[in-house]
Image (cartoon, rainbow, N blue to C red; front, side):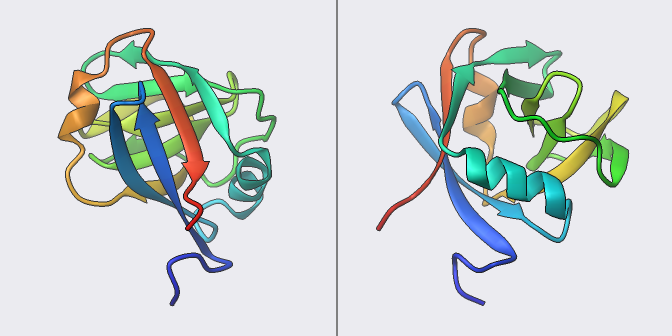
Length: 128
């Protein structure tokens, strides 16, 4: 499978213009939601922290819940439809809110632990 296929899109999460992390959105996890997000790229917003395990930013993406779940692992990326937020998991979480799993990070997500509330997060497709 190629890096950018119909079912998987490789993206960059830019943290304040200083750190870039590679991640994938995977269409098979939540097809409709991932499609809406892909058509909305690039996305940008100020970071928020939820405990020590979730970093997120709000978007204008409007998509309902799809394949709802509340358990997430380190490196997961999820969409919270009530606020249009893209959530990045720094640790394993049993969430009080259900979200749609939409993707995963490649490798180490340690840099996400250094994100401060208000840092600018940008999610975009790398153009080669």
